[in-house]
Image 1 (spheres, rainbow over the protein chains, first blue to last red):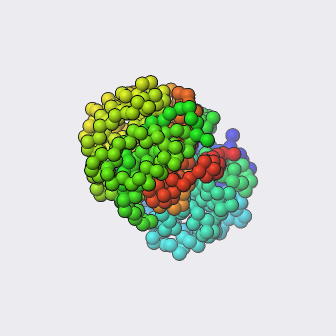
Image 2 (cartoon, chains in turn cyan, green):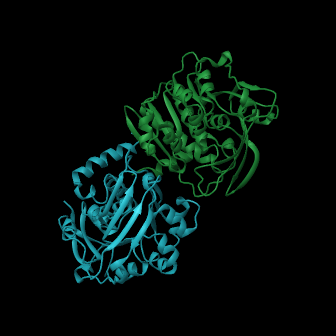
Image 3 (tube, each protein chain N blue to C red):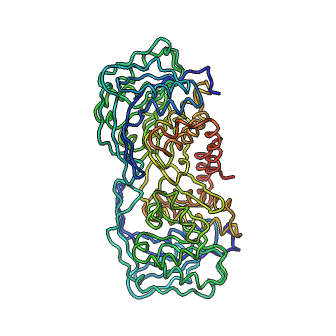
Length: 307
Length: 307
């Protein structure tokens, strides 16, 4: 039973994706950071979404989140088409090649929070324009713990805006190569340390199949691999699912997180992400239950245990 | 104090390397798998080396191993020059670009074990011609536990000989991309599983900065990251140092290893390897003490602990 006391808000994309991987391909499947995030986080807590969709957004795709108890009052439908991304994975499944990005309704996205959202405790600013990330954050009364993601596109095109948003958050979750780009560091370890000089007290570096690096300025490193998966169908959304499991756990605990809470949040993130890669899009994660999670968590803990 | 009861034999290269990395470069520094391996393993156990060097091999380089109690009766000096490798690391420190390989005296290497070596308990066949690996193994009376490494060059040029040697060992330690090449698997996880269908009951996939994957046919996976190092001077020899720490620990325990022994062997390997990358060549590892190791082991265990 998800914890109903804390409220977790995510702002991010609701999208349709066309994806090609060595395992096959799909056209216009449900995607976007907010969808992956919400499906994962709703295993553990109450989630509310801020986002925008176009007229082509299917009612069944709304219903999918609603069936998981996700609040959608902050999702606006506007004239135009939903955000669309087309990508391809070749040899290295850790990195997608973007073939097409149609911002569509995201080009005019101007996030206004419903009054019912302003009391949110936990806030995740998924990978969107850093100006919009800040705009959302400033509408929340008294957030308990705030995090963000970002990507190369914003690092190169809106660095100053990005650094301003970075300076306002408690934690960043981002990909290793992008963390190296942001900081100019030679590897993910050094990048993690440098990010904590930009404002956040903690950072999670996402390493794809190699897991994650959690670093806290005061507490140091916590590093573990991903769940071993001999076959990967589609890595799309794994990082957003990680974030969903991570924030879902933090919100379920309610308090401002200790380092130990952040460790367990990483555990929840990496275990949840291991489901996403087993099917295209949200195909697998949308059907995962708390029981499935608990079972895999046990398997994962065995893989990383000296005992 | 190293365990004096078990005897650990390694056959591998004694070499001079010229190395360029983003941190600088060195010319003709001491290298070779057997040197890295022995410096690491001698922290924990008695080591004996089989190998060949040329007339240019410096007496001080012999003395370095002797000062660590390493037996060198099986190292032959022959006319000609010592094995030489020149390599360069660019952006990705996980993979070296080979600029030059002069086999030199290795071209006529015909390993004959001294009588004092035939009672060896633990045997590591480092990355040399699989025909020579087998020739060494066949001279040992009753080995307790045998392992090997290999590389792309042998996978493409001597596949059948390689598979024969593979079928005779208990465990393989090899790089992830090379394990994928050997098996045709899509990732290191799947490669590990397939290798255990070729004879060995266990395998260790070395992932560079991302650590290792231990897989046992009967016991499953044990996976951990490498020690976090914000700055890497030279990754050369990290894999051979890992192997040295791994086998040094197994030999110090004496018994045919359980899965738990293999886990702790990986711990010893990864912690030992973290020293090697802090200087060029054997610059750092040659001065590491058991006390240095114990301190870093504690730091490492903290990094991967949920506690």
